[in-house]
Amino acid sequence: MDFDLTPKAELPPLREHPLYAQGMAQSDAGQWQQAFKSFQLLQSIYPDATEAKELLKAANMRAAVAGVQPRHTSRVTRHLSIRRLFLGALMAIAITIVAYVSYEVWINPAIAQELRLRRITTLRDEADEAIVSGDYTRARQSLQELQAILPEDPQANEALGRVEQVERMSALYDEAKVLMEARSWDQAIQVLTELQSLDPGYRDLPQLLQLAQESLTLDKQFQAAEEAYARDDWVGAIVQYEALHQAQLAFRFEEIQARLFQSHLKYGQTLLEEAGTDPDQVSEAISQFSEALKLRPLDAATLDERHLAETYLAVLDSADQDQVIDQLLMIYAKQPDYAGTAAAQFLYTNLLERADSFLSAGDEAAAAADYQVAVQLAVEDPSEAQEKLSNLASETSP
Image (cartoon, rainbow, N blue to C red):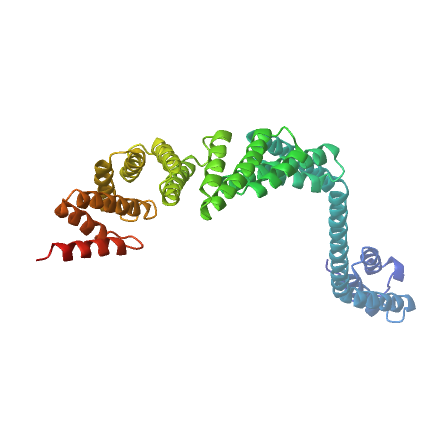
């Protein structure tokens, strides 16, 4: 808007001048820079007007303030922004804390409880399945974990105790079986007795315990028989081995059969060695050889032993001297020390008797032959035969 600034003869009053109205309007609108210019022009028209000066001063001051205001506003805005950010951060933290507390107080316990209940159900199912399948180790592990979760649960505690007992009984049963396989009857009985205290009717425990006790008794009898056998007590060994057979034929059958065979054979040999010329003892020896042959019917050595004993018994009962000498010569050829050299001595005696008979009958050659055989026999004192043979030789020499 342009104003005519040419001085005129008469000016209107200050407040009636258009610049006054314009400046005041700009002031009211807060347009202080424009108001300052308007009042500056007005003051130049009315240089002496105090009000114009005051208005210009006021507009100038307000314009100056308005010039600084934008920077001030920017700083305040920044402060406000920082404050808002700080408050926002605090609010976010507060919300996070409230959310965490809410989760821990309401949500997390509910989830944890749900998971706990699921785990308890799973452990119970696992334990039941393991028990049904006989896998007591897995059942015990599941129940122990369940007990850790529910230490006061009576069902879990009872089930765990039952499973541990069954597991213990199973272990004892297996241990006893191993000990019985190893014939460790004392230890097996001890383990089975402990098992019996837990469950008297466990599986075949009664039968196993009875078997172990009987086997222990049989083992002790067998040991006693072995001791008798070791000290050459053939009668004692035979009695005890036969008692073992009568008690339980299957017990160490092959071993006892072998021991009985040897015991009868050795006893027969002992009887023969001590028999001398006692036919009753020779007869008993034959009986022992026969008992041995019942166990081993085709044993060649024992058959030969019995045959010689029967021959020797026939010799002792025979009145035919020639037959006696022939049979004794056969026995001597097989066993020079037969019957503890009693057979050789008996042969020696019969040869001397027959030789003397030949000599009395004038058959010096036959007598010399018998003396000669007698001299060669392994007897304790062959001097009589030697002397008679020497005398005969000197008598018949030219």
